[in-house]
Amino acid sequence: MSARIKILDKKQIQQKIDRIAYQILEDNFEEAEIVLAGIVPRGNTLAARLKKVIEAISSIKVKLVNVDLEKTSSALNASTDVPIEQCENKVIIVVDDVLNTGRTLVYGLGLFLNIPTKKVRTVVLVDRSHKLFPIHNDFVGIELSTVAQEHVDVVLGETGQEDAVYLV
Image 1 (cartoon, rainbow, N blue to C red):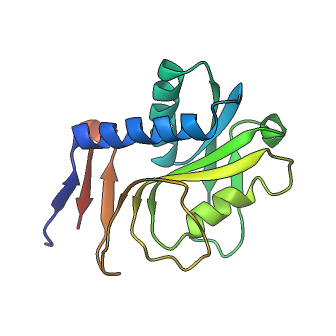
Image 2: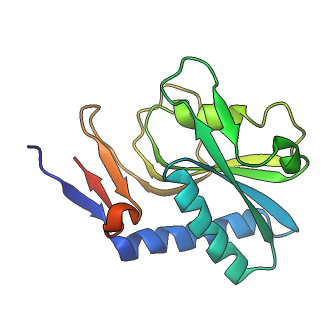
């Protein structure tokens, strides 16, 4: 069995979330409402935590949208838990836990291509820097230089485990 190396613990993850929330606020201080579109399963957990911090530190209203993608598909197969029209003419921030090749974020962004938006940004907790798609991260918790065979495992409170990011 391969070794699990803890990269971030619970406190460090919260510090990253707090910092990203302030960066989002700085980028959108003039907005009344923004949309955090979290990619299921952990991007939406991260988005919910960002929402909580942003609303605690500002008067910006945050609409949370869960994005469910078929990540292994060669085409965009995705859905949201609210009608996509509710995101029109707003700042949309697509949130995911790990950026590896960029496919998931590109698909997440693809959902919003056919509606008018003010601007679109991206958030990832961990950027592995193995992009195959031309995707830019606007807000990043941590950048890791890894080899392709390594895996980054993000645990955000699921199954009773404590929050952590592991390199496996």
